[in-house]
Structure formats: C-alpha cells, structure tokens
Image 1 (cartoon, one colour):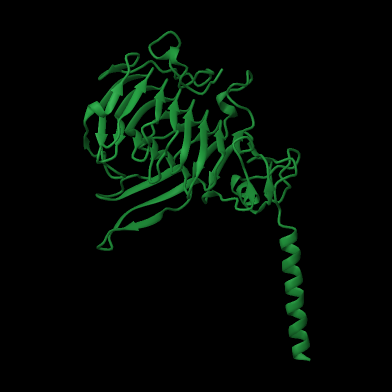
Image 2: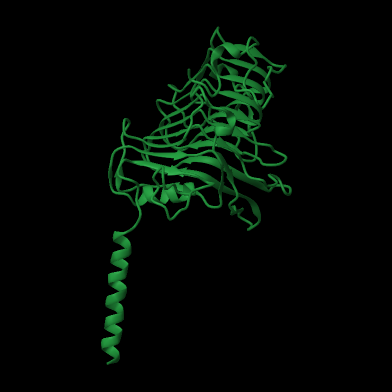
Amino acid sequence: MKKIIKFSLLLIFALCSQLLMAQSPSVPKDGAVYVNAALGMDSNNGTKESPLKSLNEAAKRVNVSEGEGAITIYLSPGIYGLAETVDFNPTKWTFSASNRLTVRAETLPDDEKWSHSDMPVLISTMPFSIEKNDKGEITGGQNFGILVQNSHVTIQGLRILGEPVHENPSKGLLIRNYPIVWEGKNLEDLRVTQCLFIGSKYAAPNHLGILSNGTALEVDHCVFHGVKDAVVMWYSPASNSSMHHNLIIDSYGGIVWTWSATDDFKFYNNVVSNANVLWMLEKDEKLSYSIEHSIVVGYNSLVNKGGGAHGFGEKADQTKLSINKDVILKKSGKLEIIEDQTSRNYLHIKPGTLGSNLGAGLFTK
C-alpha cells in the first residue's frame, strides 16, 4: 500500500511539473512586451492592457521563449529598481540585424510630445559580489544592472543611474556598478542609443555606463553626465564599432577605453566638457585611432594607456590619437549646459554656443 501511495505521489508530481513547464509564461505572440512599474503585475501576460511590473520578469520571459523574430520590450515612465541583474540570455530564440531584441522607452526623445519625465528610470539596488586578492583581503565588489548575453540588441531611451553606495569605503577597496554589460562569446551588434546615464560620485556612483565584449558596438546620441567611465571595449576584438553624437559631461574617469577596439573604431560628432582622461589605450599601444568632427573642452589628460578599475594608467604616446582638423581641443574651460529641468534640452549644450552645432545629445532628428 505504501509503495502504491509513493508511486501515485511521484506520478502526480511529474504531471504537475510537466503542466507548469507547458504553462511557463513567454512573450506575447506579436513580440511586444509592456512593462509598467506603477500599474503592472509580474503575473500579467505582458500585453499593453496587462503589463508586467519589472524588467527582470520581462527578461525571464524572453529567455524561456522559443522561436525567431523581433521582440520589443516597452517601458512606461516610472522608477525601476533592479534588486537583481536583468539577465538577457535567450538560448532558444533567434534574432537578426533586422529582427532585434529591443529594450526601449515607450516614448522616445524624438517624439514631439516627449519630455525628460517620460524616460523610464533604472537604478541598481542589488548586492555586490565580493572580490579578494591573493592574501584573501577584500579589494572590492561589483554588480551588473542589465546583462546582455546575445547578439542583435538595441537599448533605447532610458535614464540609467548608478547605485547609492560609497565607491571607496576604505583604502584599496572599490565598489563598482556597471549599468549595461554585454558579455559572451562571438557576440555582434549591440546599439545603445538615446540613453541618459547619470551618476554622482558622492551619492550614486555610476562607475561605467557600458562594458562591451563583442563586435559592431554602436553608442550614439547618449548623454553621460557625472559618470566615471563612459564606454569600455574589452576582451574580444571590437571591430566595426563606433561612438558618435554623444555628449559627455563631468567625467571623473576615462571616457572611452579602446583596450579591444580595432583600428576601424570610429569616434565622431562627440562633445566632451570637463573630463579627466579622454582616451584610454591598451598598455602596449599597438593601435592608433582618430577623432573627427568633435569638441573637447576641459580635460586633465588626452591619452593614457593601461589602467583598470583602480586607476587610469600613465601618459601615452599622443601620436597614437590622430586629431582631425575639424576637431576643437581646449585644455581648460567648460561648455554651457542647460540646467533648467523643464526644458526639453535639459543637460544639453545651450543653443548657439560652442558645441551645439554637432548634434550631440538625445535627439536624432
């Protein structure tokens, strides 16, 4: 009798497990997933009429979906606290350059009715992994906000903050938040566009906006304000990559790290004001790069080499950075930034002043 009961329970458990697997929530059939931090519920189906509450849940549903084609996640205005890494790792779904995974604001900056309050706000609140040296001493911690582990991805129109921690709690200890990380093997085609990265080294340090490991990275029409480092390309050769039409203000680290970028990396129509180090080369200084049609006003160092999470290396051979004739470089000074939060051009260059003619900022039209 006991054996019969035990067998029956095992059978019921197996049937329930199969039923739950069959009913695992995935993305809606049209590939549009809606998320609303204020009105959504993670038990909803993810349609516009029945939105999810968290970006984490949207990622989990993408990851279990099977098929091919475009998937677009629409974020409504609101605050999205990331208590854990938003991990996109869709192993059973096929994307392409024309059928992408897109994570975007419901309303984008080019919409004539758009305002800064329409930008979904992402802020990390998760714990940090612990790092130790050879002596077993704790040297730091890190975490990832959005982790992308697939190709053909667009992230668009988001306001991305750091994490409210003390970046250097003690000597030799460094706490680091990486809001967007692209990590995996043989990845290609990540575009981060029209995003506003904001950090404060005193209140909510944004250590590094984009940490990239793949080819065909494009970062365009973004604003980095008070962010320590803007973009780091590392590990795998970053061929066919570019940064253009970005506005970088008050960076206290290194703006672009070309550790793995190949010599076809394009840097143009970028405007920089008040930077620590503009460009970080790999330690061996093997490759040369060029700056075109850009403005850099106020910087401590133009080109360094080496460095890492704890420092910015040493002065590099400045001839490794070719400055085109249409580039304006001024060692000291600051550009005029609009600080009126009610203005559509908030945190952009004041019209009619130096740098305003290059189209750097959130708007593509």
